Image (cartoon, rainbow over all chains, first blue to last red; front, side, top):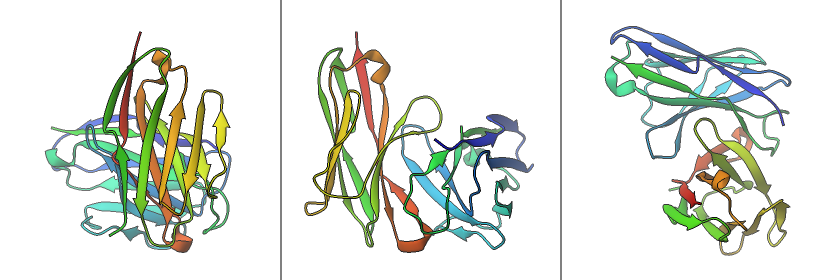
Length: 118
Length: 112
């Protein structure tokens, strides 16, 4: 299957700082990428849909000013957690689909990023 | 409200047992249902189902979809300890944006 690379896999930061997480599709172009958050023993919650060349679409309850998403190219989307707080500590996962927007294909996931805010 | 519900939430079996995991859904504009296996990190893709009654099979795993009753099952036969994981069901819905809504997952533990 297609490969999605996410970096870093683990990050520890101080409260109040910002953290950037990268998601790359390595062998295909992804016009749309998705960012999820997963708490321990819970399922994946969609945070936002990242669209190449346009603004991201955020799910209800997700603060767009706190979770900045940039999708500058067809192979890279970034999620920046701004002014991180301990409650932002979580597992963040990105996913991408190949093909044009709307094509019904499976999503491939990055390895995830474990964020710990101290 | 769109939702995906999985059952059971957790399951403990012994090697060699057969397990059936359930996934029911209520979404608008259903497009497909997907099963993923999640071990320590990111989910890995297992199956994508779009049509009712057509079984998809991969080794000891198989899955089928019933679009009339709005559910899917994932079967694992002759379970092994390596099958221990969280199994996630997701539904692709909502038209062109291709969003996935995930169920809560089933935590499967296979004991030797």
